[in-house]
Length: 521
Ligand code: ME8
Image (cartoon, rainbow, N blue to C red; front, side, top):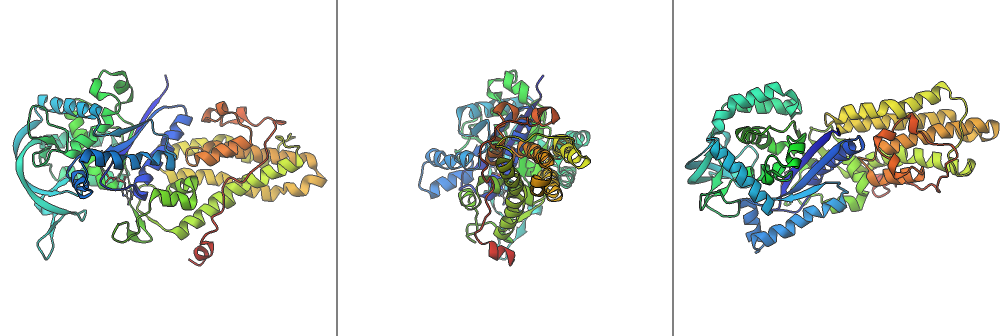
């Protein structure tokens, strides 16, 4: 039976245009989704937009638009990123779709039937920016009397009739779940944060609103719309057919999700509220929630007022899509906060891609084109150095990368791959095939064969990260489409001597802009 893998991004609020932070999460998921597909899994990769709630409603009002027309427009700017960033998502969900309303209402009714929802009155602090409720003790008061949440968002006092979810009853069962499933919240520091939050006691959660109507109507409760987070989280089951019932084939196949990838800002919603809702409805919680860190820009918070927001279009126009994807995943240990600097991006891209992998491929393939009749060279007896490099590329690399990616250590996975790039560049310098042309042409061919085969393995394994560039490298090695998944990443599928090769072309351009500035720091 094929193994399945269900991976999701957060669904993004349509109150604003997409930026670096949004593409970061989705690129990470995309790399993982592509890796799993190439590794033989049946993958479902979901992203989309979160379109209800006061925050979106207010953004529509500010734009002078009807909320549906507004969300249609902004959702499209997120959908356009599929092309810009080369995402391979299998679905794009919008919470204003009928399938979603249906799924939310089914889940709601389950919670009511389970006795976990009751009608009460809410009075407390609400932050529209976070679409979150806060306890008095969590807030700080500014000199002019404003109440500020730990996230920095301003809170307003809310009093209204509301349905409540009996979250307080789930404390022990949540703690037991975390205990039994140590890898269900990662990284570990985040898991510890969640556990101590839950241990400190949970209050019942207000899950409906009556002071606006831009949301999913609560069944049998005129005037109430669902709290935007119960609506938003449900997207993960909507997209696999929950609206058609728990017995629907897709739901059975893909639930529970293997991984919800989120930013650290929305960890609590995914690791406390969501598993409680699911368990209350008799469904399994997701297998893992991984919270990554936050990007700052040249040392500062990304913000419109500072004018330092990095747009995906701007990023790609400057560096290209593959180099942008690579930089984001390589630069910062995944899970930590990171700082985006153009100087650092240029250094990293030029070093690793242009000088590292790009130069290795370019040097090797042009020597082959010139000296080996534009075909994969023949090879003779292999030396220990040849065997060592081949073993790294054909055997050890995939296993090492798989291990790292199974724990979302993207930077480590790339480090493993670049260990092979560096070893190959060391090998080419040590073997100096250009010097062998006259003295020992047969050995020259063997060296070039070993290098070309190493490049084949590298091109296969970088596909999830830099898909277009990897495809170009594989084209240059005449690798047919059916030999591009990881079942071909072994000695049995090695290059065949004599296979004709097309003329080589550079794959990773150097970024020359600002290079001097970067060198000067
Ligand atoms: O929270 N650095 O949507 P949202 C890294 N709709 N990642 C960042 C970032 C930054 N500076 N800024 C944003 C929501 N992100 C809800 C989610 S899910 C059921 C509902 C990323 O548009 C990060 O993944 O505010 C964060 O979690 C997400 O964008 C928040 O997007």
